[in-house]
Image (cartoon, rainbow, N blue to C red):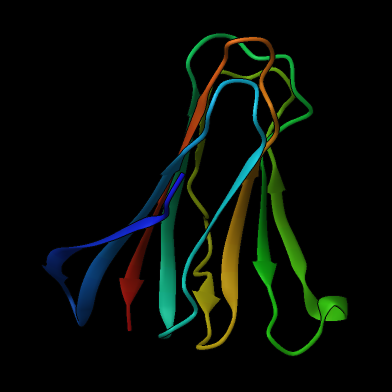
Length: 121
């Protein structure tokens, strides 16, 4: 389960980045941006290989300052197979901070996949 960062070309001022990770069967996972640059969150996609039994995918800004500054942006509904988080306001992730997307274990034999799309500013 490695995080893969792929630059997908240019749009506006910066490069588009995609961070991806897939889990093993019935395993929780967290996919994170690398914090190496200022990025604007475009959207997050999560999917399970079958309808899961889980508490809901969470999306959190993980502050480099201190855990007290971590901010929960979204918790998806429980037991949802596909989820799209498309923020209505600009979410800027500053250098040193990271965006963490956590997909709980889905149940026996069920895997999950996370994709985070950002624009480097």
